[in-house]
Image 1 (cartoon, rainbow, N blue to C red):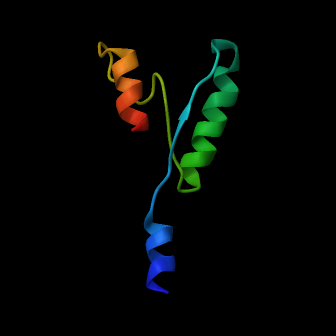
Image 2 (image 1 turned 135 degrees about the vertical axis):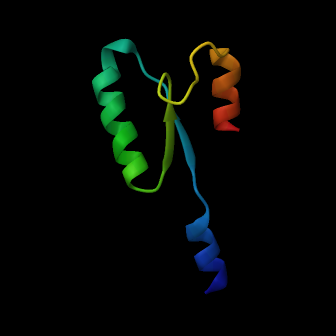
Length: 62
């Protein structure tokens, strides 16, 4: 039972990559995943303005 509980505590992180044309769909997927305990990240929501995007994305998905 302890192993099962530990598995539930583990969080997954998912980076959402999308085209500007799909921004509305990406926002809906992002909200859905985060509401269901899946740590979704996407630009520009999870990247600080002025940061190197490539480096920031790499650190988000590590």
